[in-house]
Every structure is written in C-alpha cells, then in structure tokens.
Length: 257
Ligand SMILES: NC(=O)c1ccc[n+]([C@@H]2O[C@H](COP(=O)([O-])OP(=O)(O)OC[C@H]3O[C@@H](n4cnc5c(N)ncnc54)[C@H](OP(=O)(O)O)[C@@H]3O)[C@@H](O)[C@H]2O)c1
Image (cartoon, rainbow, N blue to C red; front, top):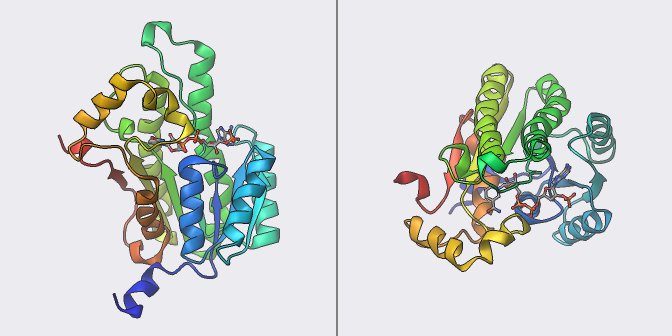
C-alpha cells in the first residue's frame, strides 16, 4: 500500500476518548487508536487498569492518560470530558464502549438488572456523547463510534435487556448521525459477534454454548481480539469521512443468514 493511501488512516494529532477501555474490546479499541497515532484518554472505573492500559499505550509512543469515569454518573462524565480537554486536547474521536450484560429468561428478569443494563449500555452512551459532541460540532469535525452487538440487529434468548439496549444503540447512532451530518460529525456503530472477554466468560466456559456459537457462525469460530482493530481505525479516520449512521457487523457472517 502506498504511503498516500495510509495517510487516510493516520490519526496523528487527534485526541480519542474511549470508555470501557480498562479491558476487553474497549482496551482493543484504545490500542488500535494509539497504533494509528492518536492521543488516547483511557476511561473506566478501575484505577489499576486505567494505569495499566494508559502505560501500555504510552509504550506505543503516544500520549495517554487514565481518567476515572462511571458512565452512569452525569457529573463524572462532564468532569472527565473537561479534564481530558485540558490535559490531552479537545476530543476528536469518541468510542462509547462501556457495557454490561445479564442473562436470564424474560419471565425471571429482575427489574434492577433491566435498569442497570439499559442505563449503562444506552443512557451511558447518550450521556457521554452529549458531553463530547458540542465541542466537535463547534470545531466542525468529529467521529463517534458506538460499540453495539449483533444482538442489536438479531435476537438471542436470555438477552432481554442487552439486546434491547443494543437495538437502541443502533437507533441512537442514526439519530445522532442525522442531527450532526451537516457539521462534520460522523456517528457509526460496530456490531461484533462473540469475542473472548470477561463479559462472555460464562458463555465461553459452557461447552454446549461455545459449540453452538461456532456452529451458528458461517466462519465457524469466535472473533480474535486484534480483528477489531481495523474497523475501529477505519471509522475513526478520514478514510471513512463519507460514512455516517451505519452499523457495521464484524461477525464472521452470523447476520448474513
Ligand atoms: N465480548 C463480546 O463478545 C462482545 C460482543 C459484542 C459487543 N460487545 C460490546 O463491547 C463492549 C465491551 O464489552 P467487553 O466484552 O469488552 O466487556 P468487558 O470485558 O466486561 O469490559 C466492559 C468494560 O465496560 C466498563 N464498564 C462497565 N460498566 C461501566 C460503568 N458504569 N462506567 C464505566 N465503565 C463501565 C468496564 O469497566 P470497569 O472495569 O469499570 O467495570 C470495562 O472496561 C460492550 O458494549 C459490549 O456490549 C462485546
């Protein structure tokens, strides 16, 4: 590939904010953005992991710091965005990733778990985007990437609140994209299948579920964590500047059935 082509994917000089960056897919997204040259604000609740991940990113040669952030707490969200702006510069790229799940049949689903999953996965994305977007709109440029799931588009038993939240994330992505399309702010979602993280340990350790997922996936396997990097860099970079409001599936063909 010529140097000229790679320039479309260069994030040098950009500041990225990644929620849920303390582990799992958020850590992969933060690492990908750093590899493409962005300064990265690593956001999450665990101080030890904030230090571990931001230290790892600094070793890649970019500026990176940890910022304590609970996406359920609006004051903490606005406080973190102000701190990031002061310390790393205005946010050009936001990855909304922080998410949780709870798996039981609909008739047993506890109301408090419905609230926790919906509030974290849906309201949390809204609160962070609402805190970051005004600066992007003022500067006329920004990229928002919402981590969705294949279960935002197709159903799955025992995932009432999770699938509902991810369907909401896909719709939220479209509404934000439409409102901000004329002001240079692109909003897209990534919808992964199963990748091995803490969120899915319970499924990974159940031989029957593990086998079912492999059989159900046309490519016959789960995703490998580094396979997420390309789509994150693409959606964060000028290479995708005419793409907005889309949900991109990274699922080994699951939703092609
Ligand atoms: N793994 C998969 O197979 C898969 C597939 C499709 C979509 N996804 C999506 O990818 C995203 C990340 O999932 P994952 O698998 O990487 O999960 P994970 O390993 O459990 O990581 C979840 C992340 O979210 C953070 N988080 C949770 N609640 C938070 C809150 N209230 N405030 C701030 N941060 C909070 C956690 O930070 P703490 O350390 O503070 O808890 C952690 O960094 C989620 O949106 C998930 O729905 C995952």
